[in-house]
Structure formats: structure tokens, C-alpha cells
Length: 270
Image 1 (cartoon, rainbow, N blue to C red):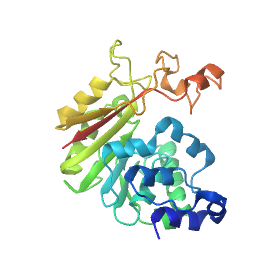
Image 2 (tube, helix red, strand yellow; image 1 turned 45 degrees about the vertical axis):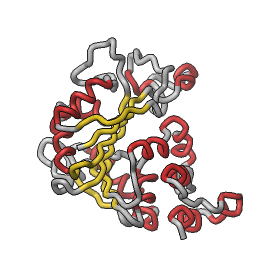
Image 3 (cartoon, one colour; image 1 turned 60 degrees about the vertical axis):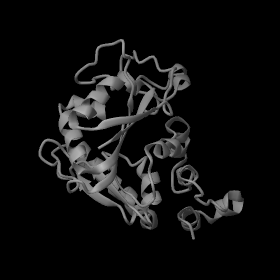
Image 4 (spheres, one colour; image 1 turned 30 degrees about the horizontal axis):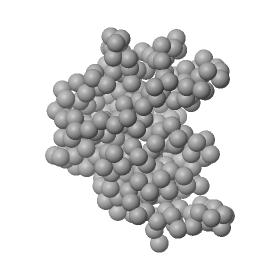
């Protein structure tokens, strides 16, 4: 029985009867797409597939079912819902999350919610490994040269805001095997606007992100426009959080019409 068939059997026989039988992972993209649309995910999270293109993004990064894959700071686990089931049988998903013993209540509760998510579906997430990654002191989330792929989604601006971007890229480089892949998605800043060193509006220029990765030793091998959005003007008073899904300035139609942010998608190799 394939992984995606097990998802259906365990989480929604009704979906099978409704015509979603035979979700066979004939290719990487189709297997990922099946999981991304699976009944274990909320309707809200599935709706974001249209803006985030998870199957196409992960295929671009070159993921395979037998890899050891780390996701850096998975937050609420939007990508975890896809990556962990995909790697459950033959690979290993490692969530390099925040510190559960942090002084910040926000951070502690974030880890608690993530763990609760994993506990809801042990048949999908039972193989997940948790690790702590919190600069400046807790940086060894995996042994040196032990993982095949590291992924980070919309996190560089957070590291820049905390002054830890160099340290984060360095620790990712250390953990990857030689030849391993770093996949990066980030809110794309306007190249005509000087980069804010703290990325206070949440935007990072593509060239700045590349420079950070190359400084750590990575080599850029491919770019993709999978997650581009030319409607994003990037000039909002409340930054990128003005757009969905946060809608920090209110649920105004103009922001809904723009959709989620313009994002660059980069693949690096160690």
C-alpha cells in the first residue's frame, strides 16, 4: 500500500469513495501533490497550495523519499504536513524548531502547538525527529555532514532581524553532506531599494540572500519563479504581513487581490 493510499485509508475513507482513489506517487511531483491535497490538512492550509506551490517547489529542490531532510524553523508546520508523510517510510524528516525552554512564551507555545500537531496523526508523523535550533547558543541541530537536504521557507528576514543570518547559514552548511542541497524560499525585496540590514518589512533582495549563502560556502545552482507574484508592490506600511495570510492592515479586498507575497526560490549545493 502506497503512502498516499495509507493517508486516505487512515484519515478519510469518505474521500476514497468520493473519487480520490489510486493516489499513486508515479513521480515526485504527483506524490507530493497528492499529500498536499490530503484530508489530514485543513481546508485553509490546502487553499494556500495555490500560492505556495509546494509540490513544484519541492520537486525543484530535488527531494526524494529516501533522503534525510531538515526543515529549519517549521513554525506551525505548514510544510511539515507534506514533508513528514512523504519521507515517513523511507527517509527522515527532522524539524529544527525553536527552543521549548526559551524565555519567550510565544516561542514555547509555538513548539507546544507543533508537537500537538504531530501527536494528532502518529501514522503520518510518528517518524519525525525534533531538534532545537536557537541562536546564539543552541546551533547543533544535526551532526556535521549528516543530512541530504535542508529547507527553509520565509525565514531569512527573521534571522536578519535578530542579527543571526551568518550564524544560521554557517550551521546549515556544517550539517549538510558534501553535495547536499539547501532550498530557500523568501519574500523577495525590490532590488532598486537598498536592503534594510534588519529586513524590518520582511523583504529580502534575492542578491542579498545569495550573498549570505555564498559567504557560508554554498554555491547557487538554480533559481525558479515558481513562487513569483508580480502583483506584490512591496511598499506597504506594515510590510509583507499586510498581505495574506496575515493581513496585518485588515482584510481589505486590494490585499486579497494581490495574494501572498512575491517570493524567490533558490537551490544551493554544498
